Amino acid sequence: MKLNNLLIGVLLAVPCAALSDQGDLPIKTSGPYAGVGGGFSKIDTRDGSISVGGESFGYRILGGYRFAHLPLPFNIDLGIEVAYADLGKVDEVAAGANVEVDMKSLITAGVVYVPISPRWDVFGKAGVYFWDGKVTADGIETSNESGSDLSFGLGIAMQTGSSFGAQLEIESVDALDGIWVATLSATYQFK
Image (tube, rainbow, N blue to C red; front, side, top):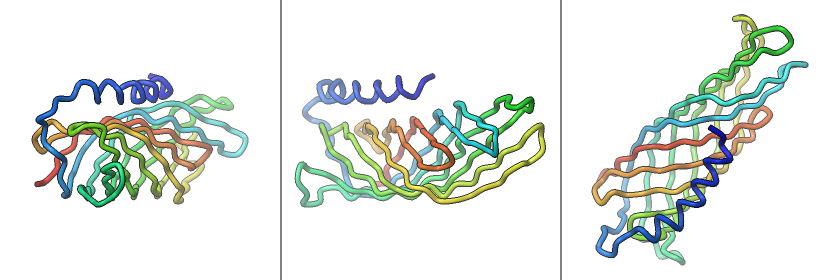
């Protein structure tokens, strides 16, 4: 699955979601939420003269707080979010060796929600990825790095009318030589 196709899908889903909504749906509320999701990550890195890149399946566990009904223009809501993400492993043969890159991270982000209907929001995120990356060649660890880098994301979130919801997001992380993450998560808001 190509991340570019997923990004196009997210952008096309926004007008469809707004048109498919009905008028008597619940209004979003402030409160904590939690979620779990899975998706794809695209990781590119260079270890010495070896360049490794590829896509992998990963998962995310998240929690946050949404501040709804703030006196902001366009009914914008704000939020904060913390997540643990295992970005998976990228495996490639490079320079005659089986090279594997394994990434895990802790993420903190501020979120801006722009409601497009009572049930749907588009959102943007800006935050920091605290990551740990390990590179192995033929099973021998050649590099173990950690750091913190900025991340930016865009997505669409949906509420079902109960406490359950879902969100699809794409994030860019300025770590290693570039990381893209696309995640679909199920969420539950505590009311």
